[in-house]
Structures are given as structure tokens and as C-alpha cells.
Image (cartoon, rainbow, N blue to C red):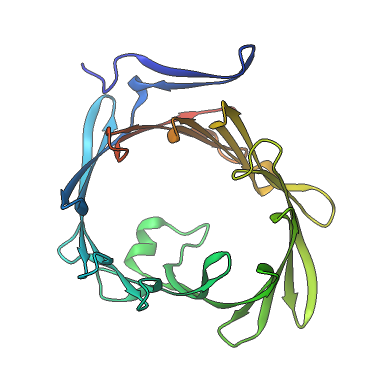
Length: 312
């Protein structure tokens, strides 16, 4: 019986010549999902992308899914529509631009014809920001059966709009309001040498502001990809990102969320993510992904498997 990969693929990453950082191991004999990507271009513009996913059990393909996304452009060669087909009717993303070609509006239309995402954008000294967001998602209760949820669909709607306050070309505060124009969240920013050094998140309930977390950034390793960590009001670490570089290139990124419950390790080579390991304390398995790319940099294949761990 043939496996997708006959041997174990491994990559050992080093910082300098002596310090061994991490060893990424991908066991091809355990592959449970295999997704391949195919692209079609016209005049250097992407006009279609096809994803073919195969589900494996005990070395056999037990299920498969093919999706195709087509892309439409205007006379200025700006992307105005992306249609993704995996049923008879497509899901569509629609883009609208200002006269200066800046994206100002994005909507997502489901295959049932419903607008499930609507975002508006504006431009500030530090770039494009979301000023309005509305999203409709399928409601899934923690104890709800997945099949039942899809047979008897209910939805959650998230709506907010943002207000940005600037001083000396730097964003100092973001205020977030709900659909009833009630202030719900405030984020304050502090800078050092023109870079964000600290973010303070406040939740607002009944006009009372409470600090939820404080996030700090450190640029000792990289000017563009800093390390960071966030503390709650009790000074417990909520989340963190630690990056390791070799010759100024990112080779390993470790992200920890939810007080250490979830951990992601991402491995890079030549500026591309080539592997990821996702694990959690509240689950008894981890997910391992391997990525390969075409010479032009587009993703070629993603292989995935899940394996049991001793996490509790």
C-alpha cells in the first residue's frame, strides 16, 4: 500500500551554529487530509484557483471535495468579484473601490443569496482600517449536535463600527460601538520610536470601563515582526507570540492563547510557512500541517494529520 509520503520529512532549525531551536517532523504515513492547489493565469492575473481535498483513513481515500474560485477584474485590473463553487450556486466576495483605486467596501454573499459579511473601510495615516463590520455566522452551541445544527439553522449576528482618534499621525485610540451606537470597547495605544509598544484593551458595560488586557511589544529581534505578550488585570499571561530568526529570516513562531490552553508552532523557510503544529491542553490530540509551494510562490499542497497526545 502506498502512502502519500513514504518517509518522515523533518526540518531542523538552528539559531547560529550551536543552539538547536526546534525539529519539525512530519510523518507522511499518518496523513489524513491532502489538499492540492491549481491556478490559472491570464496576462499575469489570477483568473481561477482549484482546490482538491482528499480525506484518508487507513491509507485509503474515503471522501473528497473540489472547490473552484474564479476571479473577475474591472478595466483598471482591480479585483471586483471572487466566486467560489462547491455547490450548484457559488459563494461570492464583492469588492468596491474609490476613484483612487482604494478598497472601500467588501461583501460576502452565501450560496443561499444572503449577505453574511459586510465591511466598510477608510484610510488613515497608517493605512486602511475597518470602520464598519457586520457578520452573520451559524450558531453552534457547545453541546449541540453538528448535524442537528445544520438541519435547524440559527444564526449569530455581530455588528460594530469603529472610531479612530489620531495625534501626530499615530492612532492613539480606537472606540468600538455596537449596532445601537453604544460604546462597547476602547483600545489605547502607546508608541516608542514610532512603533507600537503597548495596547490597553477596555470593555465598557453600563458606561463603566474595565481593563481586559494589556499587550506589550518588543522589537529587539526584528523591527517589523516583534515579540508580544498580553496580561490580564491580575498580571497573568493571556497570550504571547515569540519569534526566532536566522540571518534576519523568521524560522519559528510560537503563539500561545487562552492562558496557555492553545499553542501554535509555525515553521518558516525562505519567507514561507512550511509547517504548523496546533495543540491544546483541553484536547487529547494535535494537528500537524505540511505546506509546499510552486516556484512562483503560490501554495501547491497542504498535508494534514491528527495524532493523540497526553494533554488533558
